[in-house]
Length: 273
Ligand SMILES: [Zn+2]
Ligand SMILES: [Zn+2]
Image (cartoon, rainbow, N blue to C red; front, side):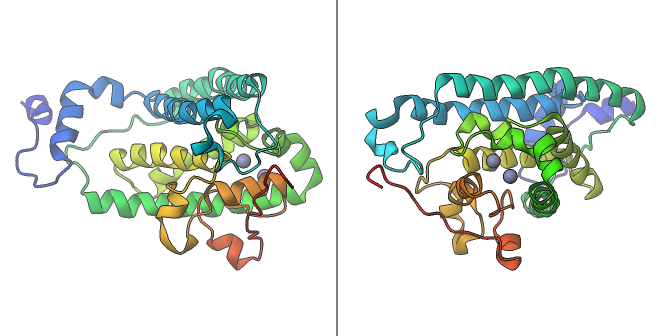
């Protein structure tokens, strides 16, 4: 009886996301309750979000509509560079992230999925809290790893192989860096008691923001232009970080760099310079 009640969609909820959540619980419970699901979601987001920008890189100056926005037009990624970044991310996920998830299955409690969907307001507020917390953690980590030569050399330098980032280079990370950001991405929503649906939304959204940081184009419709007051750094700020590594340490927002005086505006290059 209890099991039947659990499987029945909640009919009393007036939440907009309830029909979607009921559908997921009824039809995809096995998938969404799997400990591999967050990794699958994260890696496929990185993969699919990177593809259109990789196409722009390959087309290059043949599509002036987009190429006019390239931040460093004198530095075009090659297919070899793209393949190296993607293979590094794939290798790290297969040989380090997946085994960590398998170990976690034995030592961590199995999370339960609630019957109620979150409200849209809850997704927004919880999601924003997770992003602000992660942004703060990474700002501190990033600052330390640029100031300490050994930490930089052994842990963060992998990500700085290229002065001009491109979409696939988003996850060209050393294993310790990937495991650190992976730990926060997993733990922060748990500490903030987020609904699983919020957690997955934040996963996808934060990977979109990370890819945008690395696209190498200052496109006028990216989030940093859509969100007012320059609250988000986006590609201009992070591209500048790859050009001038002692600047713009925050991954998403701009407030910590402004407060601590590490914000440096982008100086866009042109081919004639
Ligand atoms: Zn970067
Ligand atoms: Zn850095």
